[in-house]
Length: 115
Length: 110
Image (cartoon, rainbow over all chains, first blue to last red; front, side, top):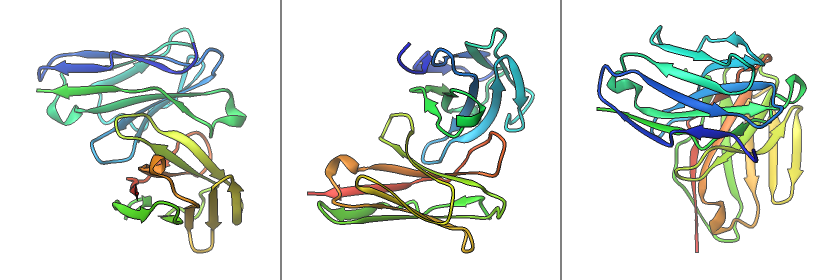
């Protein structure tokens, strides 16, 4: 596709519900990142994939958060037993290869609201 | 101390003026520095990257880096209303992770 695609655009969940957020990166992009952006804050790093390998998950806030990219393209961020503090915009970004990792292309994000 | 600090603003400048956005970082090992622009409700977009001390110009934008002072800035010349957005400073030590500041809201007034 022309850009990074994320779905759903908006998600409302009841506290305790599990959610799955999808990211479809730019075709051919090796690197994929997930960021969490709370209202009025900058994006906070969650996790990083190079192809299907999850090389860094140091930013995942708890074991309720899980990300995968099984075939090295589409990625899913799953949040189990959602809490109100999980409410944020979840941004996915991709880049072409390791040498150009600094140029990230962001998707439009998924705005998650936990009630 | 936050790793990347920015004044949240809002910074208001008149149309046609120079907007000056500032950022400081705490990790002396940081190697790469970036400015992203984020319109309200939209995703961040890279506008400038800088890796060595000094100035880097691209159109109306100039990024300035001073590693000794751990300071990076963005100047926007001839500011336009369309420049009104939040500007995010981001740094990278090495590896893959970008660390963002909280952003400075810029308002360019007619």
